[in-house]
Length: 431
Image 1 (tube, rainbow, N blue to C red):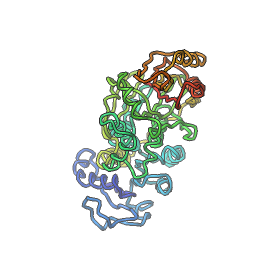
Image 2 (image 1 turned 90 degrees about the horizontal axis):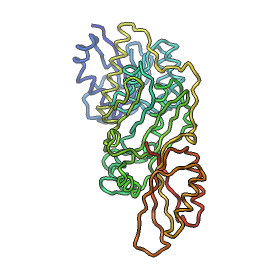
Image 3 (image 1 turned 135 degrees about the horizontal axis):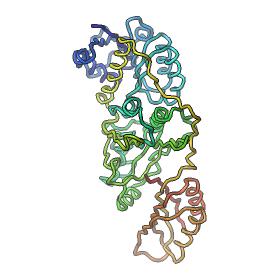
Image 4 (image 1 turned 45 degrees about the vertical axis):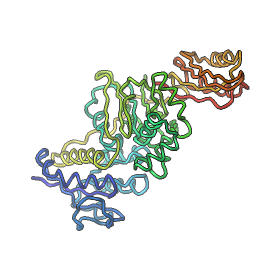
């Protein structure tokens, strides 16, 4: 039986999970593949702290050259994270002729075009199934199972931290700050949650999905990312629920006639929808295609063993390709036609608006007049009446028909200047 040597760089949470999975299921992998996948080295700066997994101390090293470029290592598994040293590890491994498996969404979102091109030039594999969705096989599904389809849209709940916070804000009536603190106590949020709650983690994943679905590499600097911090408040969650919706942080990827929108934003989804049922730290991706129609991929989007499961699946595929000298698959497709990235200002969608206005005669007329002047059509209105004296502020909730985002935002700027409005209006999209 042919043996394939694996070296891991990064012995953190996911690295430890991969070590555990490879050791636990080595025999099962050999039965299924006819290949013996041997873990030969694990490199990390810290090789003394216990990771909760048994490992032969002789394969631990702090020397990267024992993995990258080592003649007995066929597959390098990069699990460092970030785009600094990780980029060098992946580049050096590919240059040395070693296939690479990574779970690094930030690296691929920022430098994927360069690394994929290098892998193709060398004729070797660069697999990245765990970079989006953790234990959910969404990357593999789009690359393989749906390869005969034209992808129309992908709507994804791609960050478990944000989904947990929003779930707790709804179910327990917590403020954002209290829900975040709880997530940190539970180990679902980092001490510095910026990447998660400000939408950047979801944006990296959305960019990777867009590249797979539409064959182009989005420029991250031109993409719109709106997180949940300072945007979603408890009252919006409450009003959305009254209207039959839940608020989710969505990665939205949609392609029409050579234009692709890629954006991240808190969005209202129907409570009865598939995405509306996704709670806690779970992730989901709703994919709409021309042939397969709508399919949902759901599961744990992070965590030691779920993510390790996807990494090991990639290792198995790459090992099979090496042993059978399989021709290199297209890693990321390249569109034959120019692809235009659609600016978020041009996106057409429905909108949820919360506007706090003085409860006086004529105020609604002023409000609707501004919206009409900007081509924003109202679908429904909910006004929260009070028993207070005339002139006190009351929230008005408006759901629009389809409207261009730039028109809605321009109307809200004008509305915000009106004397009848006592605080900045709130806008959220609806899918």
